[in-house]
Image 1: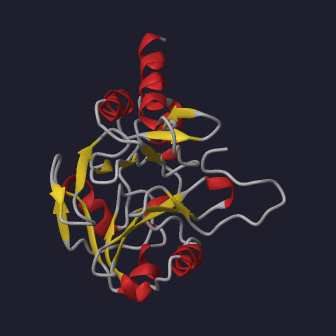
Image 2 (image 1 turned 135 degrees about the vertical axis):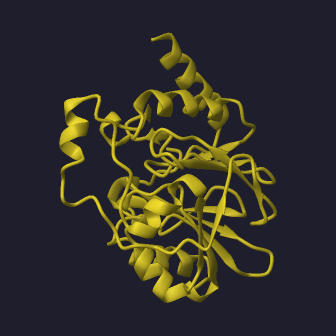
Image 3 (image 1 turned 90 degrees about the vertical axis):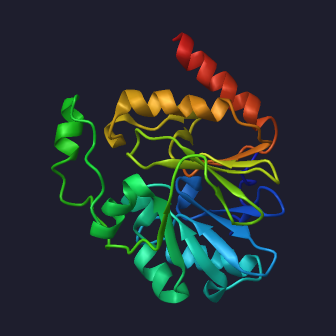
Length: 246
């Protein structure tokens, strides 16, 4: 099973998507993932830090690659939600890595306060009143914008896919053909959009997810769910086409 494991066998601490891009599961059953990008100089770029409880699994994933927190020089945050930034304070304390995020989510990260969710449904209005939504404030060293090619692992393309949050991004490592979807699309019990109750703007999140069908990649890594190693672009396109026709 792509990105999965055999029943009864220990679950790997890290999965190879390409020789440059690796997935680190930080919760049981692949529900939340971070990603590691290896640099030619031996340093590491980390994408997302999971929940507050995630850092030990991230450190274990680094160790499986022969790396340590000291090798982490940069931390990219796909968006300002606690299941992606909750472990940031601990990881930064161990690595002192510079945090990078889209300009539209940087303020939320620096306040430790995620953007409000869409209140056009009752569930959204209730969710905004929950007292457990925050995370430790994170200083953002640099911001990026849509289409920017970051000088990371030979070139990492920013694909702005707002709606889940205003500054939500997907990331394309063009050299190896690996896409990190962020929360634009989940792979939990099959491909699906992110739950409406978690989105700042539900229609926009569905609209911008279509951008992922226009890109060129061989492998897709999801921040929620197992990765897809074979036919990833076709699977994503088929999902988007079916949803558009529904």
